[in-house]
Image: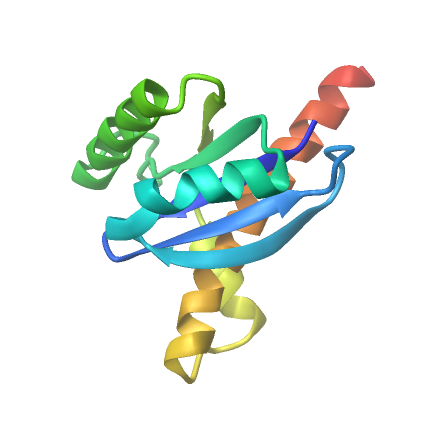
Length: 136
């Protein structure tokens, strides 16, 4: 099963993909969030994605913020538009900071790529969880 992960922001959405076996996560691309819905049919067709993990931005206290509510609304729209995809919310706390710690973004392109890297961290965390569940 091939997975994608989204790190959805107000302006940019980072996307990561798994390998076909659902073991390895890697950064894929960054889209303007306003163009995300129009870009997804081609992505899903080309990459044969069956499930999408969406970064769920809880606060450090585990509560919901305004951004959390925005993400839930976007997820609900995605579920209605792409009914053949499984949609999963996954805790993303610190994924963006972890991505930024790899290398300080100096250019616009590097900043955009950092969103896809954050999505890869979200996906990696989810895939590790699934692996542990299968093997426990």
